[in-house]
Image (cartoon, rainbow, N blue to C red; front, side):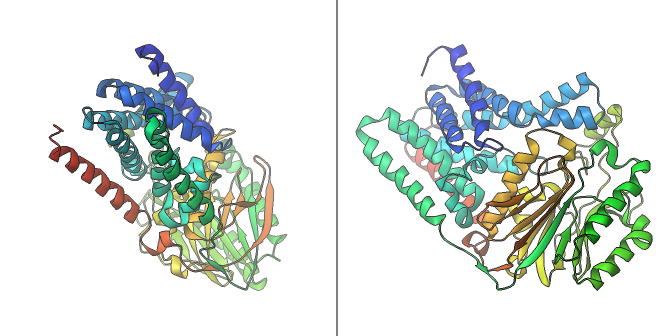
Length: 501
C-alpha cells in the first residue's frame, strides 16, 4: 500500500465506489469483497485518526453512489429547489459515511499496538457491530448497502437461512480480513486458504439444502403494478382514473386465488371510499372466491394522524397496520429540529402512527401470510413474526418516490433476503416497479418491468417448516455471538497488558 496520505485517501474513496457494484442492479459481489479487503488493508497501517478519515472517505464513495436516489426524492417529488436537494443529499451521505469511519477508528485504536491477526479480527468484528447499529438502532434503522446483501449471488448466501444477514455480513468481513492476512503472512497462506475455502465451500453446499417444505396446494396470484407517478398519484383529478384502473385489472383476474395491490394504491383514506368502492369490490371477490389484498391509508383514533394499512377482502380476512415507520416520510425523528427544517422546505410529512407489534396474521387463499409495507421488508424481525403459522410473505411498496434510480433494484435485492431467511415465497407488489415473485431460495421467479402498467401473474406454493434462522430467534443469536467475540478480544487485550483507554 502507498504511504502518501493523499494517495491513500483517494484509494479509500475509490474502494467505496467499487463497493457499491456488489449491489443491485450490478450485483458483482466479488467487487464488494475486494473493496472491503482494500479498506482493511489501508487500516492495517493507519493511525486511528487516519483510519477515521479513510473510513469516512470510503463511506462517501459508498453512499455517494449508492443512495444518490435521495436527491431524486427530495428534488423531483419533494419539491425542494436544487440547492436544498443537494444540501440534504450531501448531509444524508455524510451522516451515513460516519459509520465506516467509526469502524476504522475503533478497530485501529483498540489494537494499535497489537499484532496483525488481532487487528484484523477486530476490524471484522467491529465492522459488523457498527453495521448492526446502523441497520437496527439509528433513526429506526437504515440497513441499506449492508455488506451481506452484496453476496446473494455468491456461495456465502447459503448461510442466510442459518445465520441471517448479519451472520453473512460477518463471514464476508472475515473473508476480506483473511485476504489481507494472506497477503501479509507468506508462512500462513495455506492455513488461511484452507479456512476461507472451507467457509465458502460449506456455503455452496448449504445453498442446495431445502429448509422448508412446499404444501400440495398451488396458489395462483396476480400482482398489479399501476405505474402512477408520485407527483400524479394524489392529485384529486386523477383519483377516479386510478380507482377505475385497479378495479378493471382486478376484475380481469378474478380467476386468481390472490390479487395484490401496491402500497397506498388507493389515493384516498379507507373511510372515504369503503362504501362506494371497496365494499362492492369485496363482494365481487367473495363471489369469485378470490382474496383481494389492498393497501390504503386509514384514519387513526387521533385527529390528523393515520395508519399505513393493508386490508384483505373476499376469501380472506385481516387488517395490518404498518409497524416500522419510515423516518422523515411517515414520522419525524430528531424533533423539533427535523420538523422545523421540513417546514421551511414546505414539506408536510410525518403524520402516521405505528401499528401494534402483536397484530394477528391476515389470511388469503386459505392460508395465513406475513405482511410488510414499504421498507419493512428490509427488517427480518417484521417478516419473522408468527412464521410457524405463515405460508408465504406479502410486501406492498411504493418506490415511485425514487424515480429511475438504483433504489428499486436495491430494495428488491434486500427483499429477496427475507424470502431466503424464512424459506417462504414472497409476493411483492409495487407501484412503479419492481413488482416480483421471489422463491424461498431468493430467486426472482417472475418480475414486471419498471415504469409500465403491468399485472404480474404466476403460481406459488404455500410453505411449512422453519429455517434455523427463524427457529432459533432470527438475528439475535448471531449478533450475541459477534458481541461476545468482540468482548473476548477486548478482555484478551487487557490481560496482555494493552492499554485500551
